[in-house]
Amino acid sequence: MIKKSLFTCLSAVGLLLAFEASAGQSVEKNYAHFCAACHGADRLGGAGTALLPENLARLRRADAFKVIAEGRNASQMPGFGGGLAREDIQALVDFIYTPLPKVPVWGEKQINDSHLQRVMFGKFPDKPVFNADPLNLFVVVELGDHHATILDGDKFEPIHRFKTSFALHGGPKFSPDGRYVYFASRDGWISKFDIYNLKVMAEIRAGINTRNLAVSADGKTVLVGNYLPHSLVLLNAEDLSLIKVIPTIGQDGKSSRVSAVYQAEPRGSFVATLKDAKEVWEIPYGDKDFSARRIATDDYLDDFFFDQEYRHMIGAARDGKKGLVINLDSGKNVAVLDLPGMPHLGSGITWEYQGHPVMATPNLKEPVVSVIDMTTWQTIKQIKTLGGGFFMRSHENSPYAWTDGFNSTDHRDVMHIIDKRTLEVVKILRPMPGKTAAHVEFTRDGKYVLVSIWENDGWLLIYDAATLQEIKRLPMNKPSGKYNVYNKITRSAGTSH
Ligand code: HEC
Image (tube, rainbow, N blue to C red; front, side):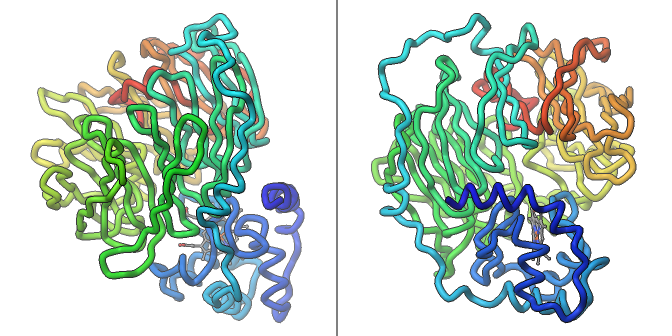
């Protein structure tokens, strides 16, 4: 039900935003007109986050005012300072910090009741029903109309296109053999798709407002991190049945949202960070009771990634000026990184540079890519770009790293090609002038690069990774992320895991 009403709301968003609110209109009306399409009629979240006092613990009221007036950098949150009077914005601030009479419960019972097994398991063949390299497929998420396309990564031809849940978030994750892909949507629905047989196997609603999911390297368990309720949810990867709900309560006894969950294959564990407590949780997935080891951190971690060995975690708070390096073995905060431009660590990549492992991350606010030596944790170069970027990608077989200008105002249509050997921008592509170009992924062999033209009448552009020439384009409806099976399941250093 909720899914459906969100769809209707979202299609109406353009219309609603066109309304001119006059000062003095009731706050409920303003909320319904301007906010509900993204944050939910009931403030429980949708494409935007849930706006409840229990989820706004870290945001001071003055900052909430600023976010509503000016919008938020690098997100879909628009600014309303132009259309709403100051007192209207203040009323909205007070409104969102007012507790709901009743926050819906989403616990074991509700999760179990939502479980849908779509097909009989075990009766499908263990071979793909199509003729293509199953490890060189891409899952392309098309946000425009909530679909995903399975793409043949050799011929660059779509094999199958299917409807996904509302507003996928956080990137789909594959089973270790690459046969299944798991999706999480913002409104908590988790689904399992059999790529070989092109069928949705099972679905379950793990939360009301969800951040992302991870799949254990043994293929047995799925972990979901929620914004609302404040919980981690463990599911059986086979049929998505519920294993356990873990409420996320910090050492200080306060309940917290989850910023993200990942699996750390070399450690045999899941790693989760709390958003409202300075804590990382490591949960070994081999353990029966999935008990969490808590690691205290010096700051909040909204965004993070790992070195290739998963010994270190590199994280940052959203508004922080520094990055933190945490040694996951010792549990110690071992270094502070100079990352002044709001890094997007979730898109960080690593490679070998002059015999040392280095990491690189785009920065949302500053037009630079930070390159950091991962042995000394010193910044070795800030590579200048035309505008703040969001995604960065490379491949072991390519000397180039690609990054966009997604977060700039004037350079959303560019792709910067950085030579990983010299740390110089060697070429700037403008794939379709005036149209947003973002998110890159390489083919399994690193020979071709797929670039999204992130528009409703968008495209998937395919480039030769060596000559940097476009070789093909496919129409897509706001293609966002694309995920190569092989690069993901082998944890390629050039892509996020
Ligand atoms: C087009 C979608 C959209 C609309 C419309 C929208 N928001 Fe948002 N809003 C978002 C998204 C997405 C975020 C999360 C941004 C991020 O990634 O941090 C957000 C974040 C916020 C935050 C910060 C929450 C936090 O935890 O830091 C506040 C406050 C907020 N919105 C209030 C409002 C209000 C009030 C309105 C109506 C006047 C509104 N928003 C309209 C999408 C929207």
